[in-house]
Each structure stands twice: as C-alpha cells, then as structure tokens.
Length: 108
Image (cartoon, rainbow, N blue to C red; front, top):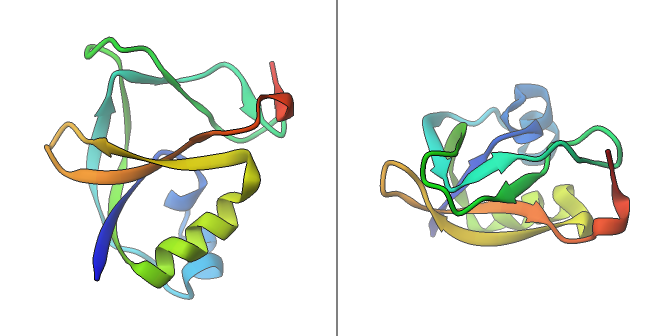
C-alpha cells in the first residue's frame, strides 16, 4: 500500500533519501497551511514545525509516495524526537508529517 509523506527538511535531501530508503524519491511541491518553521531547532540544527492555526502561514516542502515499509524506515530515521501526525496539504492531499515530540532537546 502507498501512503504520502510531507517533508520540509532533511528528507528532501537525495543523499538522506538514498541512506534511509535505498533510493532517491520523486516528490511533488506542496505546502502545509497553518504551520510555520519554529526558531527552535531539534538537537540544535534540525527544523521543527510549530502550529500557528493561521491559514496564511504555510511551510513549503514536498510530498512523497512511500510504501508502508518505507514509512517505517522514515519513523526510525526521525527517531524519538519527532512524532508523525496526519495532515491535509494545501493541494488537498492527505499526508503524514513529522512534528516535535520531545521539547527538552530543543534549543533556541
């Protein structure tokens, strides 16, 4: 089965994709409304989304079609600092996205 994953950060990097999925993904440009990139960084350097609730705020990224196995690999890659939630993108596509789980790892 195929599922969609929205990425706004490192999973857009072809080298990271090759490492995580053993292939380079083909994605479509899309955006997530009601969110913005936080000034905080996970582990001091990785992007974190913050929910604003304002539909004028949006985060650009790409949406990728993944198998269930590939989605599990993405879960492992993102690790315990992120959790996966279901969202609806600007295009109307339903997808998963990773948001922060552990706040103590965040730094200004």
